[in-house]
Length: 281
Image 1 (cartoon, rainbow, N blue to C red):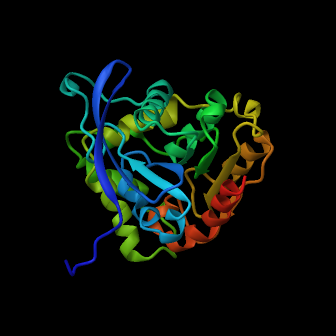
Image 2: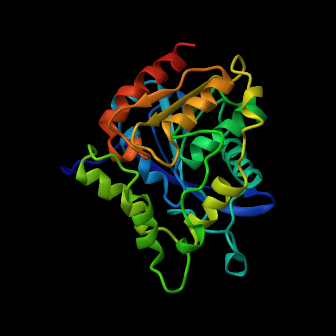
């Protein structure tokens, strides 16, 4: 074949989450230390395609990005039409843990953005010995809501368009237009009510302000990185959280809430030193 082909392999894995069978789609590339990537609320793992095709990262890390159930290519469980999708800390924890067990991963690095950046704090506290380190991108222990969640799933409003409109201002002005619109597409194409269901976790079931101080970074190192243009998880939110944990937050210039997809080259400048430190431990 003469056409370029990405070095990404996509597959499905079958496992139970809280007693219900699931078929979960994931993509991976590289070899070495497992690096699990958790996408943002209302989107899917295509946000990490630039990391998955990074030749230098692939030399030391097995990069793995999966679509949460109800997202992207991962279908909802059987009977989804009889329920409302609502993500909780317990369900998120169970999903991540079951995925790691299904792939038999040995102490992977867990990296997530936005809601993924929030849950890694819980995982570092609740499962410290299961992870080599956690990286929270646009992550903090709590944020006051700045949106009306009910607008995200109404019969008189186009769900994908209102979701994309809501988050469009979270992309930094310096981010290339190509990647801005690629990031927005994840929201334009999201399933009905999925962003709203994810934000139940983010808004109502993940206040970790009284918990992050007990994270033992000698057992599970924590890294927090936030874009200077993020007004959802603000730099102040991340700095506050980092102080409680006893670490230094990294504030990334010229990026917003979606660094890995909106401006991958700029994000890489901040991520590579973190990955080098983890690999050298």
